[in-house]
Each structure stands twice: as structure tokens, then as C-alpha cells.
Length: 193
Image 1 (cartoon, rainbow, N blue to C red):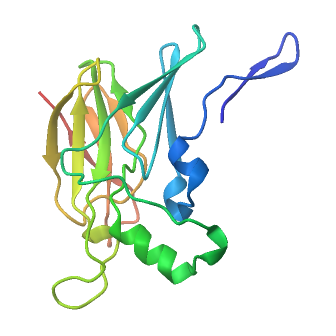
Image 2: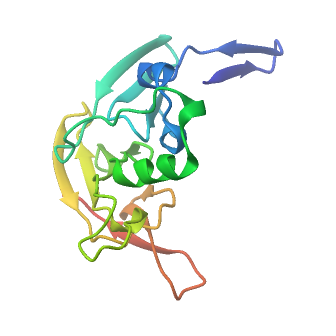
């Protein structure tokens, strides 16, 4: 998954970070997206359909599986047995229903915290009989300490998160908001105490 390049020797090296075992045996279609974030001497990475957070130490060459499940999550979604047997509509409907860990794990150097966004699973149809969509999921901000202990989870308003990539500044965590009228990106700044 990650390569290291040495411009002096003109050599590429595989650093050993790998896809989760979950994806090696089943087909996850749209939910296979990975997210990575470099922090200090480590690469933190995670996958949309799986709760685990992986930490690869660039100096030690070691990988650690940290965990990172939301207390809202009932289970890990099971992918399809075979890609060829999956119809697009079935894959899309499955993807809308399952829970997502839909952001990189971000380090806040100002507060020594880690953040991650989770979107809870939903039924395929809403109570009004219409099909559900990605903006019908409940977004949850997960907050971890610097040892990856889950400190709190904060439910955010349904339908507000745009799906852009969040980032951290001295003011807090900036989350891309969904706007239907603005031609500009709008962010909500969350400051966790």
C-alpha cells in the first residue's frame, strides 16, 4: 500500500503496510476506500468498512492494529463472496445501509487528541417509504486520547456532513458541511474540551 522513495539511491521500498485481512477474502465494492494520515514517524491508516486503525512506524518498520470501533456499531459489515456475482444496484443498496468509518484518523497536536468520523448503519428505506441515501446516516465524531482510548462520541446533525476531508487547526477540527445554496466550502469548527 505504501512505498518509500530514497532519491539519493533512486530506490523504492515497500514499507509493509497492507490492506486489512477483511478485504482479502470478500468483496467490499465501494466500501474499500482507505484513508491515511502521516503523524510524527508513523502512518495512520484505516478503511471505510472496518473499525480498526492501523499504525505503521516508519522508524521501527512495525505495524500495530489499534482497534477503533464506535460504540454505535453493532457489527462489521460482511462483504460479498464474489465480485462477479454482485449487481451494481445490490452493491449500492448494501453500501448505503452499512456503517462507515468515513475519514482519516486525524491527530490534533494542540490538544493531543485523535478524531475520526463514523456514520451509523441505516435501513434501506426511510419511514416515509423513500429510499435512504448517504445524508440520512447519523454522523458521529469519535474522539480518542493519544493512546487511542475512546474518550467520547458526539452525534452530529443528520444530513450536515458533506463528505469532504476534515482537517485540524489551532481552532479545532474543521468538518466540511453540506450546503445546497453556497458556491463556497463551508466548515463547522468543533472544539473538544
